[in-house]
Length: 309
Image 1 (cartoon, rainbow, N blue to C red):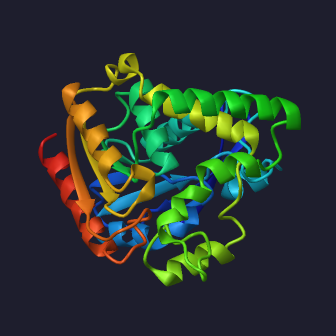
Image 2 (cartoon, rainbow, N blue to C red):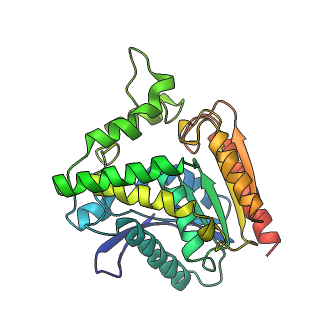
């Protein structure tokens, strides 16, 4: 694994991790992970992809991992203004870095959870820079609730300055995700996966599980609203292959229902989409008990994409 640091358009530092110990690479995964985690959690997944001639490159988002540390910014805080679009711009910088370093190799963007919403934003804003998408742990949200949530987060960011962790919004948005799995011994992270080792590592990792600031919540709610606009969905390149993957026990996608709704709306817009749902798997399907099956399906999807190019 290699580490690189590149500059963003506003001269912040972006930390990049590269897993490229691959003979005769055939493709690159640009990994876009979810909220409150970091790139190095995916080292085992990256090794599996490397074993199948696929390079993996991941960048830490603003307010996450080493990127937050390099820029002396608190975990869970994106930017004073326009944080969502700034992160999408960072992903474009990383994409350009990949193209410069590995010319002519197809790029598949894999976005998980919040990263799935970022990838869905990216496919609207930069439709010609990625060859295919794997969208993991995604959802479709109620429009009125999104607008209300964004307005509440905006007001709270004005009141408390925007950088402080917002436990009020967290209790309304993240805490309910564990409702189905609560028990006397619950840690609050049971919704992530069935795998106890994965859950314990998440709890003990100082770079995971942070509570977002009011402004970061505002930014994320903006992004969720943006990707569901009909006019924006029409900007997605119709020929680009998209694979939706999710656990059937994932509360983020309402146990598969909102993933299927996303699939339905994409199909109504003539997008090149397919969907895989995994029985008994929760939110982090790349860390759950059937991760080998998920990895295999991703590899098959990438191979099919390459064959059809």
